[in-house]
Length: 110
Image 1 (cartoon, rainbow, N blue to C red):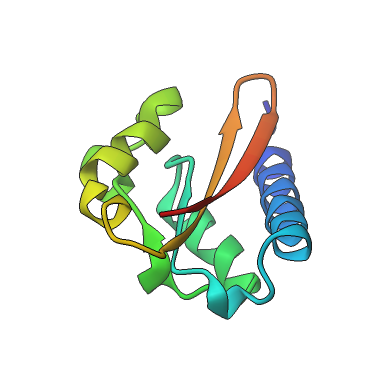
Image 2 (image 1 turned 45 degrees about the vertical axis):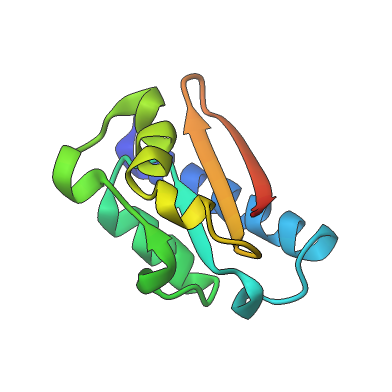
């Protein structure tokens, strides 16, 4: 695969997913408490979300400690930050990328 094209695809689909969730479920990016994405590359994640006005302090990550853990990365990140999911009223975006260049996103409110 062409790495540059994959990065562009991820940026586009992550931004499209966030826009759709904002348009349909959340008013503003400021209303988002946390974001979890597929943990492939810290720089790609942070740069993409920065473009959407989401600061890195709102991004829950495990990629720095564990690297790219593949399809388990979102679940591992949720487990590592599970205390946040026990708090009431937190608004969390979860965006995933997968094999075959598939993608999906959800809005989760605790």
